[in-house]
Image (cartoon, rainbow, N blue to C red; front, side, top):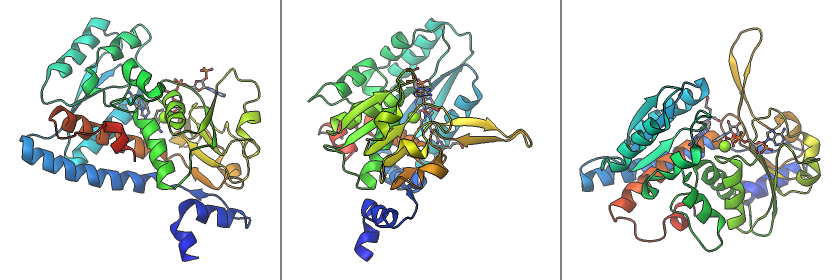
Length: 322
Ligand SMILES: NC(=O)C1=CN([C@@H]2O[C@H](COP(=O)(O)OP(=O)(O)OC[C@H]3O[C@@H](n4cnc5c(N)ncnc54)[C@H](OP(=O)(O)O)[C@@H]3O)[C@@H](O)[C@H]2O)C=CC1
Ligand SMILES: Nc1nc(=O)c2c([nH]1)NC[C@@H]1CN(c3ccc(C(=O)N[C@@H](CCC(=O)O)C(=O)O)cc3)C=[N+]21
Ligand SMILES: [Mg+2]
């Protein structure tokens, strides 16, 4: 029994096969562990270099959700001793203004990582903007070259996008085997779903991507050992979309307003009440992938600082995620 308890997935299987509910993954505790390691590295880096690692955030517009995310990212930087600054530009900012803010961070030696908060207003050319981030500072792994290297067999990107890395981290923490297993990723946006699918493929899973135009997505998910949903469509994934004992990561986040109190509630893509009865392991919203995504941003920023100062010799990502 004790041995079963020590093994995440074994533990989940043991109970599910006895009619129990899926185990919920505690993303916050995984994130706290990562942040502790980062904080130690930050302190050492400060001693050696005389300044903390730095993150520069570019935020265009005034979306409420983005404001909260950016605020949470800067708080997490403070927590671990990383210095952060945010360039805020108005909704109507010109492409030249955005490019100039990125150039500023590219040229600033005290900035190791740059993150452009997405989405950006429609009138801006996202590809041109993300391509202008210095590759060695692309801690969100959004630069087309980093994404391309994530897709190419045998290549290693300098940085893996934070949300994809967070999903992998949770799967590894729970000892979920990827090699040879069937994974279905729902939603293929550039920040979440697409990089997740590429990273799972790199780990030798067999991956299917489904999206809004896919006919009968449940035909795919029902066969999947691992289902990862990143759409922002609340309660899209029902219990009957899942195979018994499936592992489910809920990445999508929607903000639902309570009609009585007016309060905003966070809700994921997965109908958790139903899914818990079928799956073996689920990452919930909130408290699942989200907090780990932020921890990964800190980890990538620390990695960028080390790489820029020659403190990190081996291939970056092969170390960072294992
Ligand atoms: N927890 C975390 O750390 C993070 C969470 N998120 C959350 O993940 C979600 C996705 O973000 P992002 O990738 O930026 O979003 P995008 O809008 O870029 O992509 C959404 C994807 O979902 C697909 N989709 C939408 N509705 C459905 C549906 N009903 N059935 C199947 N597929 C559907 C779209 O399909 P199509 O391509 O056909 O339009 C698209 O591929 C959001 O809720 C966001 O808040 C994002 C980043 C980090
Ligand atoms: N370039 C870029 N990179 C991103 O990584 C990126 C982005 N743009 N745009 C927006 C999305 C969204 N995202 C989240 C990160 C953490 C939480 C998070 O911490 N969520 C908490 C709850 C937070 C709350 O209470 O609101 C949780 O799920 O428990 C959520 C969402 C990163 N994104
Ligand atoms: Mg995501």
